[in-house]
Amino acid sequence: MLFAIDTNILVYAHNTASPHYNKAKQFVEMLMNERNQHGELNICLPTQVLTEFVHVITWQNLESPLSLENAIQTVEDYLDAGVKIISQQDTQVQTFINLLNTVTTRKKVFDVALAATLKDNDISGLYTRNVDDFKEFNFLKIINPLSDIME
Image 1 (tube, rainbow, N blue to C red):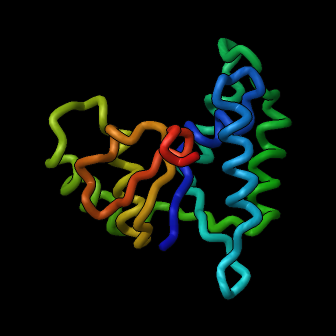
Image 2 (tube, one colour):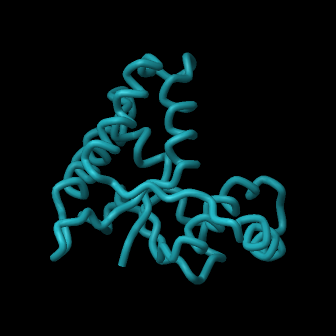
């Protein structure tokens, strides 16, 4: 089963001022050291997540933001490590519309877009702190790696 990492986990893992920093950093490091029988990582990063990560981690209102240069280097480090990057497919708009019909608020638009990308790329799991944002997508196994249950 291939899991994607959501933006919040990446931000926590790279924001030293976050109260979740240590746990998120350890979790991401663990994922980056786990390989399947083919030597591949068991995780992927959607392009949307990488875009959101750069946007959030460089935000000057963040207590300890990264410079744009450091944020870019962080993304390049993930690429160099061999993390599979997934992007929108040709079916994205239709999948997005189908999934959007299952939610009741416009506040979920970006979560639905991410879910559509995951669905179209046959990704069946998501590591996120925002479990409730994805609970209606029954094709995804949602895990909060920062919860006490994971310890």
